[in-house]
Image (cartoon, rainbow, N blue to C red):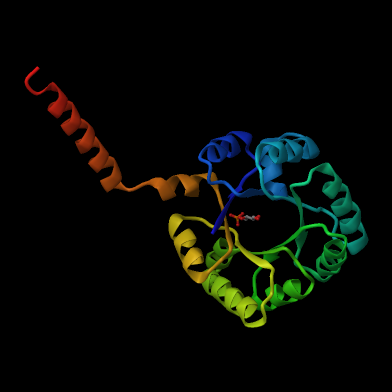
Amino acid sequence: MKFFLDTANFEEIHEANSLGILDGITTNPTLIAKEGKPFKETIIAICNEVNGPVSCEVIATDCAGMLKQGRDYATWHKNIVVKLPTTREGVKACKTLTGEGTKTNLTLCFTPNQALIVAKAGATYVSPFIGRLDDISEDGMQVIKDIVQIYKNYGYTTQVLAASLRHPMHVVKAALAGAHVGTLPAKVLDQMFKHPLTDKGLETFLSDWKKANTAGS
Ligand code: E4P
């Protein structure tokens, strides 16, 4: 499973990247706005930091506008993936950008049917939002499972990017379902490290080591 970090915060990106296990970044307008820095400058700085795909979302809602923005973004850096909404206009833009060799991430996907459509349009990634489905009492993980199965049935190459992950078990279940990518908030990545027996075990090993090395001295 590839790990993307779901943030535009440079400190979080730098910290996660230093682990050596970071494969890419996803951003959205909300995450960009949170940082309060110029959009293009932020995206280029992220692309220079992370050696992997960086999703950058269009704001236009019509195909022509999405193409204009997407083509511009694609000139900014080789790591750019143009993030498009899963709408009729987004799908048209996806088809065209894919034909031009630009990578795409179709976002705000909530159903297997939407995922089927975007795979047919040649999307590089589809982003089903697990947490937001759970928030309205639907089963986000089932949507991931269904999409993975449908893509397998037909050999679609679109990668399932599990998004809107809210806690470590979302990551485990998305990985078990066969999602190609999980995009993790920094907090979730941090939680994934933690186990009290790891901390306790390490504490014991270190104190026993100290005892062994001071014995008889
Ligand atoms: C990533 O591509 C999505 O924009 C993000 O995971 C959405 O997460 P949220 O539902 O927690 O805002």
